[in-house]
Amino acid sequence: MPNMRYLILQRDTKLEFVEMPTDYAYQLSALNLRLNKEIGKLTAHEVPVLPVAVAECDHLELLREQDQIVSGLHYLNELEQAFASIRETEYPLISLLTEIRALQAQMEQWYEEEAV
Image (cartoon, rainbow, N blue to C red; front, side):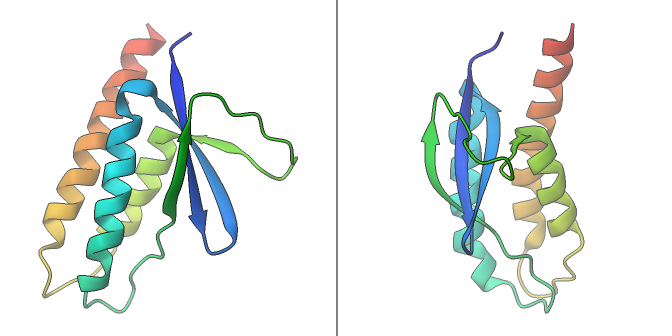
């Protein structure tokens, strides 16, 4: 079984738990920080609300039934869809989408290799 890390994200008062391969967890944390830094520069009216990365850990055991762990690929797919739907005219949104899609492609390849 591959080594995984867990990113704990906070969106308002809700926590989200994202499972990433250990070698890629830092990339998702860095991407989250960059997106949160840049999202305020967007001028579009429909900008997604992003969670903030608050912690990473090697082992995670959820104690509440309503909490779920989502795969990093699932999280990145949702993130890409949210940013792809933004109708931005001023900020070079393509640079953010490129970063999201690059990590998304790495995760797709990782999951394909792990499924073998």
